[in-house]
Amino acid sequence: MTSYEPSGDRGAPPAYDALVLAGGAARRLGGADKPGVRVGGRALLDRVLTACADARRTVVVGEARPTARPVLWAREDPPGGGPLAALGAGLHHTTAERLVVLSADLPFLGAVTVRRLLTALGASHTDGVLLTDADGRDQPLVAAYRTQALRRGLTALTTEHGKLTGLPLRRLTAALDLTRVPDPVASFDCDTWDDIAAARARIREHGHVLDEWISTAKDELGIDLDVDTGVLLDLARDAAHSVARPAAPLTTFLVGYAAAQAGGGPEAVTEAARKAAALALRWADEADAADKADGAGPGAGPGTRPDAG
Image 1 (cartoon, rainbow, N blue to C red):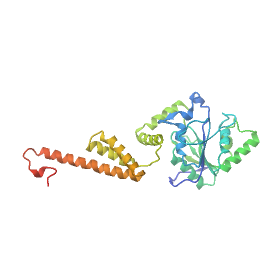
Image 2: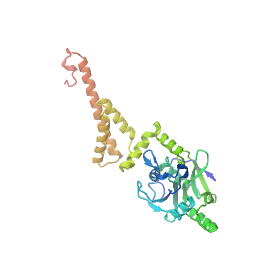
Image 3: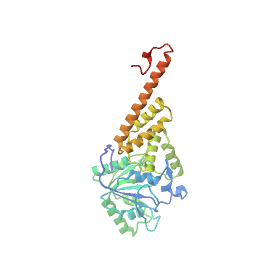
Image 4: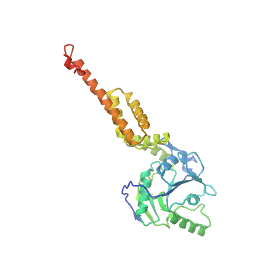
């Protein structure tokens, strides 16, 4: 057993496939369609698929449904055979040397965590890297594995038991050499309605709601663009203060349109925002000058006027 503290490396991860298990019975949710339950306006499954969007191939084991991005669907036989059977069914469709294995109920999983797992796997000689939760418990369905190690383990279990159906996942992970990465947030999964309620509440907290909303809106609109939100917020503030409150949303809309006309990209957004912010400040300067001129009274000379030469 190895413990690993993430380094925050933001380099491109190595090529990997992703395998998402989305076929559980969700008994503690009363049999609800857990992958389709929405948190922050997005289905749990779509949130997980966004986190592993740069996977070379993504396989989802479960009942096929519309998703935010294209995936390859697989199903264990018989359906409902448990996580090991689902893992075996999905593994047949993967070819990369590294495999990220995820459950479909992780509301706070992000691309940064997936990258951490892959980075830790590359830095180790173990069979896999998994997250541990707030209580220090292993979360083997938030993990990156060496694909060959999984194949060997599943083959051994099939030889011993004849099939994988009904076998607990720990029968596989106990035989692997694994690195642990503590992450109580990304490892949080939604097994009960209380978990769903807690996730929905956390997303709406002040420190999270803006980032969550922007991420959700970009997914909904099909936008893949990282911009400096601080620049846009400053622009909205300047427009509201210097012109009028309705100018804030209208100006940010116009900035987005102008950036698109200029070819898009973070640089185009920043440049359009800079121009609009400068314009708003000029409006404010003119308004201040006019107020000062009005305050000078009727006897003021021409030199007090804002356009005096």
